[in-house]
Length: 175
Image (tube, rainbow, N blue to C red; front, side, top):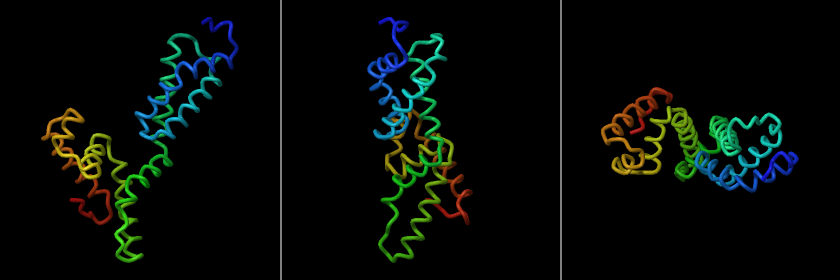
């Protein structure tokens, strides 16, 4: 297909047909939510349309599109709204105790504070906390998933708990 003969709309339409599903799949590996991945894909092709004139063919269209996708995903992962959405979804079900409305509110606030601290950890500690406490995977399962030894998991878990204790008001214990 000769892209020199096509106008901007035709090129972007061709790119969407050629790479649309691949972009959604790539975005999903970062964001883990289908709707967010589809939203990112739309943003990717809007950017392609806007920046098509700046594409210099130093790389392939695929490389260019994947680069836009990865950058948009990383921006989304850093954004407050994404962290807030994940915090709400991730920890909300484990928050309500049905003791009294007052205690539920206190427990919910404590869980929210904890979740913000967990999401603020460096990735190597955050993933261990999430996999061990929230996904309830064993050391062996985490070891296979991440390709690290059980001893490394124990060490990171210990360091992560210490970091969380320092961040939480009053040094509240997690374990």
